[in-house]
Amino acid sequence: MTVYDQIGRTYRAARRPDPRLDDQITAALGDAATVVNVGAGTGSYEPPATLIAVEPSTVMIAQRPPGSAPVVRARAEALPLADGVADAAMAILTVHHWTDLAAGIAELRRVARRRVVILTWDQELTRDYWFLREYLPEGAALDDARAVPIADLVRLLGGARVEPVPIPHDCTDGFGAAYWRRPEGYLDPMVQAGMSVLAQLDQSIVRPALDRLAADLESGRWHERHRDLLGMEEYDAGYRLLVADL
Image (cartoon, rainbow, N blue to C red; front, side, top):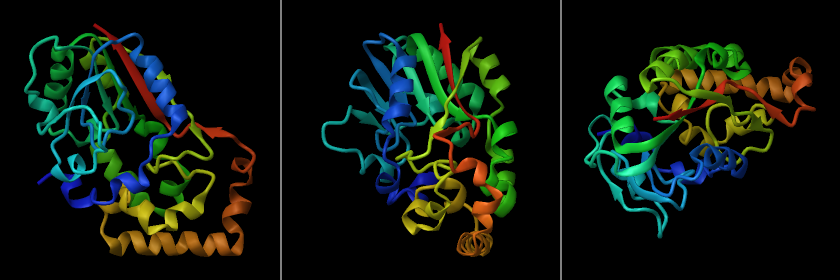
């Protein structure tokens, strides 16, 4: 059973692709006429050019919408695909779940003829995100253990361009830092269910953290501490897009 067989049952409701992030990922793929989407989940950010999607979780596969690209149940570390089967391979917010990073990256490079695109985050920056720093340091510790250093990815890719991915204030995708200017979002059970850092921690840790946030929102303390965020349109929480030409 994969992690998302356990925590992904309502994933599609909370994790709706944001069109601005989609534009950046599409631009990174360039003129690729065929794409392999690895760790594809429910199909977020999957371009029309997708030849095949690869996903290990049956729960996530079941939530893929009608008309999605063909999907095969497999892991990134052992893709059941021929060498150079597509122009590009993409992996969106998935590398931190892989059991063998080097094998997974080698597989992306093997099946792509021209380009590999990876969306991940820089933990050196993200661990200082206000939600983790002030309310859920246990979440930062979880990510410290599973996040992949950007330098390691660049090395395994044989070099890559690293692009910041600023998060819009009204981001529709409910990943970890999507609610940087809308802290009340973290109190929504649907959001919590779709966010792996909350879904994977014990509720004896998560519940008190959310209670403290709720109290700070009610008293106005959060808004006082973070008044600088309220006028910002986008925020750099450390998300990074890696683009490697092969």
